[in-house]
Image (cartoon, rainbow, N blue to C red):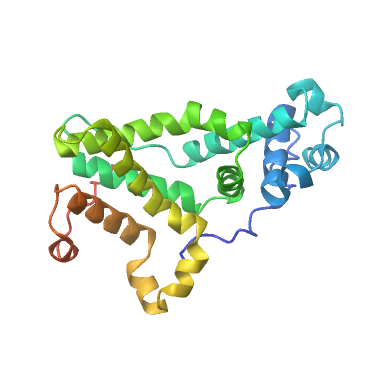
Length: 240
């Protein structure tokens, strides 16, 4: 299995959703996120969400209007939480494009795999991506599109403007697809790859290095893969 924390951990409701100091709206968002991640939109009930949040049953209508808006806002809140937990890289002026690509891919993998963080945010967003609702459209416009356009700009910089926009977008989707595979089908990958190989070559850091090398080679911006595997294409960023 690809290294990530269990989907069944961190799902207890009492730790954060019933914190009396926390704003009731925030408690509702956290409780709803956990319920929706575990049970889906149809399976989760407003009653259970309010009970988990420790609020009155009328609170959903007061803060959000209805269950559908609560769901949309909880999905957006889950994404915001992941961004807060795993912030985007902050590159100083003059950072090379290959360094940016490696950082971008490593950041995306950490967000997708939920490493070291409660997994319900990741599970809820995965459910939404695989079974999209109106919440997905808002996620795409508010969050995914700017992230996607940043990746496209990095690839354009790597290619020196040599690819037209459709090819750049296809290249960007290929990068995202390689990362998403380990989130959506990590257990299947674990069945296909021998255990020793998983431990040595399929850690998040190794995956980020591989996807970076693969992308650079495909774009003609790095060594061919056999040579690249024997040489670290992108050095680790210095610690702050």
